[in-house]
Image (cartoon, rainbow, N blue to C red; front, side, top):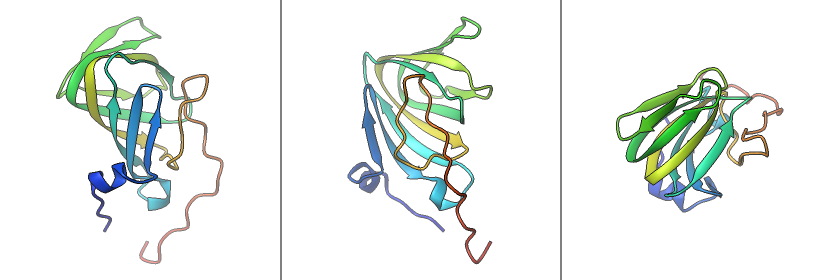
Length: 137
């Protein structure tokens, strides 16, 4: 069983900060769950151009509001508490934050923990060997 406290993660090296956001990485690749789980804050006024070419992501908005624009279709969707979006086709998108957004995010494959967006808006592919299974697996 894995038990972690968000407050402790936010105070340690698994809390990653970048332009317009910060992300507390609660589960990572080395945890062996097959996905990573993050609690992310998107700052008011941020316009985040992202294109996860190596990962699928689902996001649940917990607090705050803004919009997400699907650059493939041109559609814009409202983001507010209770809205979930899934980038199931490596969707190129822009998130525009009106009021600070707090969200829960799941990535597949899992991230290693130190990733930040590259110039294309993606996290780089993890090329390291997969984690060894635990003895109980």
